[in-house]
Amino acid sequence: MIVERQENHEPLISEILPRSNFLVRPPLANLDGIVFVISCCDPAPNRFVLDKLIAIADSKGIDPMIAFTKKDLRQLDELADIYRSIGITVCMVNNLTGEGADIVRGFINGRVTAFIGNSGVGKSSLMNALFPHLELETGVTSKKLGRGKHTTRQAQLYRLSELDSSMSGYAADTPGFSTVDTERYCRIPAGELDNSFREFAEFAEKCRFADCAHIKEKDCAVRAAAERGKIALSRYESYLRMYEEASRINDWE
Ligand SMILES: Nc1nc2c(ncn2[C@@H]2O[C@H](COP(=O)(O)OP(=O)(O)OP(=O)(O)O)[C@@H](O)[C@H]2O)c(=O)[nH]1
Ligand SMILES: [Mg+2]
Ligand SMILES: [Zn+2]
Image (cartoon, rainbow, N blue to C red; front, side, top):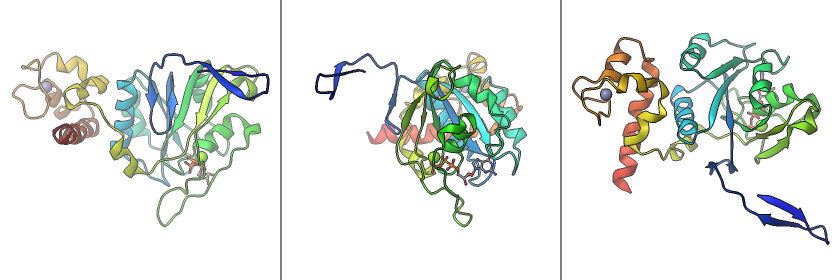
């Protein structure tokens, strides 16, 4: 979208550029990358939600990365390794000191990106760690409920050159979602879902049936790979659950 100032200084939309991709919630378009912010604890990570978010990003052609926060409280190396092994950029950060955040800086520089994750995981804190002058409001997480308090209320896009003169591009801080919201997120048709699990491709070629859904079919190389540990079991289980959800939606619609 190109916005110009009119003589009376009111903004005028002069041209709508084509959208390469968009998200409905948060409302963002033309993203090159998404930083999925996942806290090692408070709130605890949910592998299914993470796999769903990554599949959605992959299906839209958006490059995903994962920033695990609160590494000063707990480290999740085993989980991080699952995603590293499938070629996703992963980092472990302590937002209180900024340790580990440079990988995020490299990922967002020169691109249009958004920080996305549950409320209370530290999206705004991570942006503050990268850009100390930003001073975004951060909240507390409720120990009792194990979730955040929805401190950030709307998506806000920042021009990176204004925050750090050596950088270009844009990054958006966004309001956290609750895990329940993600139920409504996925609209990947069941039959296309395996394309959004990037590590399945090399095995899917070897399935007996070309249209194998990788569930109960005979001679399914994807299921066999999950059983032999070549595909992480948690990823395969996320696929099964998303497939089931997607089939239910498709039947119903
Ligand atoms: N110990 C520790 N606490 C952190 C870290 N990152 C964030 N926090 C704390 O986690 C709480 C929530 O951080 P926010 O940055 O507000 O989280 P958010 O993801 O922006 O949350 P919403 O705006 O509600 O979506 C705050 O109390 C932060 O100080 C970290 O790396 N280590
Ligand atoms: Mg926030
Ligand atoms: Zn198969």
